[in-house]
Every structure is written in structure tokens, then in C-alpha cells.
Length: 66
Image 1 (cartoon, rainbow, N blue to C red):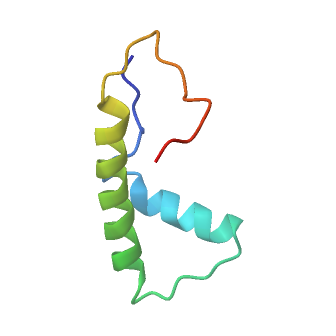
Image 2 (cartoon, rainbow, N blue to C red):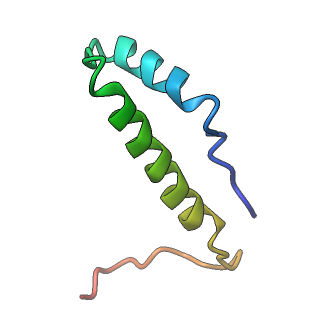
């Protein structure tokens, strides 16, 4: 099952603005390009994880074994 993050270069700046307002976390104008670039990188990495195929029968391990 392939999942999509639904993030693209077109909507990431809008998402940054909306999240900033929602969290009441002002982003200085000179920092905004860096925040957008980092979210783009994060979305790319997340898509690699989401695209990794897992069998339908997989179950989480009940006990942590390092």
C-alpha cells in the first residue's frame, strides 16, 4: 500500500504559513526560506519511509529487543 504525503513544492510555503499561524509561532522573514527548505527535505525523507513495502501480515514486536 503506497501512501502519499500530499506535499509538493507548491503547497509547502502555504503549509509553513498555516502551521506558523496555528501554532502562534512567528517565523522571521529571513528564516522562512530555510524553514521551507527543511520541510521540503523532511517530506522527501518521509516519502521514502512511506514507500517502503511492508507485508500485510507484519505485526509490531511485543517486546523491545535491542
